[in-house]
Image (spheres, rainbow over the protein chains, first blue to last red):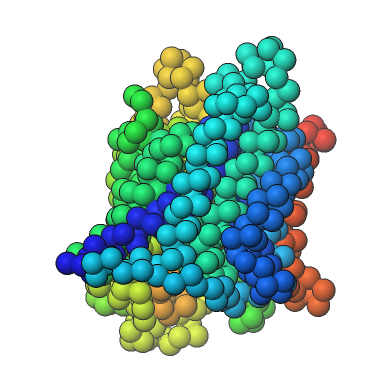
Length: 284
Length: 322
């Protein structure tokens, strides 16, 4: 029984991190109507930035995350400027393909530089035992960081001028432009924020799972599933969806072999898309 | 008007026809292998073009039909000793059946939602087959060698599979051309431009979309069976390779989405490019990044692909470049 509970709690804690990655994806979709196929690659970059800062500069991984935040925000602006600004009005096929091209470039360069051998961050903050249920320290901290990030994102979107501008553009871009909101800058900011969330989620994941430059792909797919569960364009839904998926990953292995988890996830994904494309939490 | 009297079909048809003739005349094994891959991608890209180019539904799961049809056909010919022709046809029909089931659900979605759902379908299909015991689970199936004996040994069987693939690829081109020239194809193009308006104008969008989806699924099923027959084994990672789905998509975009010649040229150029990058000393490690860069440049600056650009630049060529 405690083992089952442990596995569920582990799943839930990881779910917070999934949620952060999915929030980035859903923010980009909600504001820009872009399905960002470079999300996973950005997560992998977050993992590697954290790893390099930790192993080469002996920086604490949680301090390294601060550097990840700044770098990835700038990186997001760069991607927007190079790959998206020109085609943002050309429809979803163009943006899908341009972000996919960015993904290929990142993965290609990453493979050439880092190879695909697995890395891991050898860092532990201990764990504590509560009535037989073991909480791993790094996972607890990651979940905590995820909650802080979600709170910060909420405050930013609702109580600051740039945040309100993002929501305005998300609601109606033409009207927002008429009100004098510089939509290009807002789109760049949204993409930067989305990229940042991905990289941070990657950095957090790297503290408890081994990874390669290709690891991002599977997390990206999970992020899609989560976005659809929570409703595309709904950041809070993304966090809830993340928890749900994490919990599911904790529960499913109890009833069937672990390899079925993916089948369950994607069947659920397609079902939700078909039955309720606005997400389980979304309004009709 | 007889569509074959017009010139649009012939550049693509003759190109593929000549490639096959040259390979059959020279009878070299390495050349055949290269041509096999090339023709396979031409067939996959051209069939994807029916749903993506004409109808405007971006399918990231095209390879599901290749994998599922291929698995089914392979299973029949290896375990039950079906002849290759029948098994390949059965693979195609199986792919259509799967397309019908999937389509009933996902074709109701539009635009990016459809694209997202097909990503999910691709992953779900791969994960399902890796766990499906009759198909050998994650190990896959290996061919029963007696399946080759019927055709006079493995060497002859490989040539046979090449010839069949050649015929199938030509058939894809003819079908794709006929669709584009037909009233049905016009309906599809109307759906691509504006589905609601098309429906108001009397296009039966749900029915036509499903037909286009089934048609685009049939050929990958056939090609899959031939490919795995040639390889002698089939594994989930080969059959449901998301990367390959994306590569086929890139080929269509590279050549020109919605054109007949585009997927042919796109597949050809992509293959050549990849071979060059993989074998060159400088680009060997940067193959993926370079491909990505080229794709990015095309999307940003030549959204119509090669054929689209030519049609725009040289209007007098239009009757040849369908």
